[in-house]
Amino acid sequence: MIDVNVPVTNVELVNIMNEFINEKTSQNEIELINQIQYAHFLTPMNFEGEIEDNIVKKDSTMSFKLLTNTSNESFYMAFTDWTELGKWSTSKEETLIIKYDDLKTMVLNDINNIKGFVINPFNQNIIITSELIDYFTNRKSEVTIKEKTKVMLGEPANYPQEMVNELTRFFKQYKEIESAYLLLAHYESIEKPNLLLIIDSTNEKELYSQIGSLAQKFLAKDEYIDIVQLKSEFGVSSTKNVKPFYRRKKWKLF
Image (cartoon, rainbow, N blue to C red; front, side, top):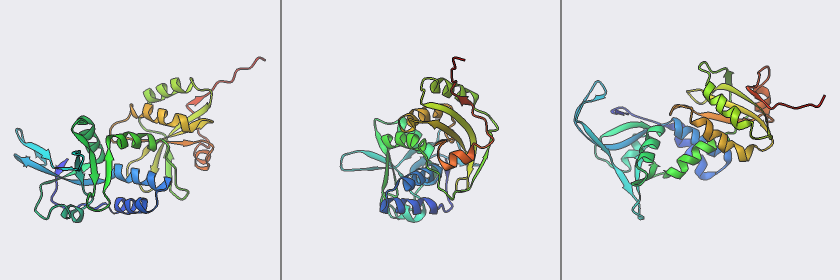
């Protein structure tokens, strides 16, 4: 988080927020979650102290300005650009550039006092509560890949062996899971690649949220994992010439 004196824009996020408000489809929801998680927001705050070379000096203090609703619930503000911030205040505001993971941590660390954060409260007014933060994690595990999205696939350079071991133990408990593949996916519209877990299962809807939550424990705060079905067109094409890290053993009498 740094002091910001330059314009910030989030054109793709603004567009998908408007699309989602007009048409609440599953695909728009997934795209909205993706864009929120990769956006940079302007967040008003009070700062007392000094900053040198983008480093806050010792004994400096900062506190974030809040919005409070009629139910006396408090929210951090997250603006997509200076125009949106100007709808809240025309004064020169002390502002930080802040990402979703920072806002998520701030909300979850003060859950008794902070209800969540709100994106562009005087326009789209997208409210993200702690419950929605949990939902985002689970919903990401049900990601739907657009048919025309360009994806570059490869093997993770730093293979998450601990995660794979834990997932393997989990998969062994469910006979519905036949096999699983792990890849690194770099999507055309997303700057940083995600891990991609492809699963052959007959009961994916009930298990995906558990699998997503389990895998997330082994990821850094700026890392994500997408989960797709092997039986999908994307799943089939992605696993050609790729060996699964898990395959259910089939027992034979002879």
